[in-house]
Image (cartoon, rainbow, N blue to C red; front, side, top):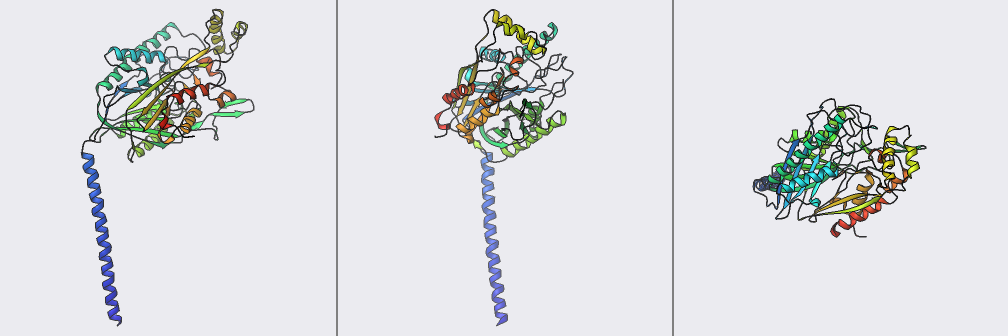
Length: 480
């Protein structure tokens, strides 16, 4: 009987093994069929309603020129540590007018230069409207300064030669930006757009409250936004063409007097090394009160670039959300009022200040006050793009603090909202109400180097928030 039982058990075990093997084979066949279907789909042309074109142009200066960002430099740049670039991405949905994204390795491209680029594009035969053109400064502090940007940052009048070099570079930059945009517009081909959001943590709040005021140092408990939104552009064959992203952090890893695109450029370079032929583009989010850590060494800029690139690669190798059209592009200008202006005697007294920047600033505004030509508010253009019901992008001018990015993602669907700063103009810092209340460089002293008569009046956050709310389509807003 034991032998019979043993034989029966052996047969049962063999049957079970056969069943398990058959199930495993069936599963393998299913996986193979699924993989085969995915391979076939990858070989089939995608039904692309998008057309996309991209271009990259080297904007590294070939002549001496002052660098922007820091006021303690005393001479024109001492060489090129790493080239700088501008990249353009043209996007057209179906038969719509194109929308243009232009990223520039520069501390602050002013509205006047952007306006000249737009004018030249349209003179070349394209009809690109103001609302459909977004220009993003990377805010690297190691790129040439441009006319009208931070006029009092050096605390003295630049020499005629230095001014001519700045003007010459601006003219070259204007021509190259125009060239990049027109090339991208002419290069448009069928494409597919997808996007996703990752996270990178090297940005840290730099506003640290002390008994004597706000200090510029690490604030481990300060507000941050570590989101890394990434847009992927592929061709009908699935081939990767463009990677566009942004991160809310100052490009202040480096303080050298040499040309360098900082972490934003290292990020782009790393992606383009990993994907030959791909154009990588980087904008900056609401990171005006965020610094990269660690910082101050060349290796740190590379480290941050690699960290961002790793996260971007992870995202683009995972399923991403499709971006659909049409693209609704809207722009609204508001006025941000200044606080109470000093009178003529106050300006006269400030001209004697020991701080050269303060004295230079006061001398200028003393002349303006005597002619009653001091402006009462700053014109400020908010730009909002809605890609069908798939993606909302909010573009804000200036050095915008992190509170704005967090707020607009809270008031709208955070899974579909992407907020950029340093867009279309960089007129000054844009403090939130919290930052305005606490004071410090971002709310007060920075207005001197940027050439504004005084700090903003209370309440500019709400003025900007109302403008954004007016432009955002209702489908993106959170139900309250």
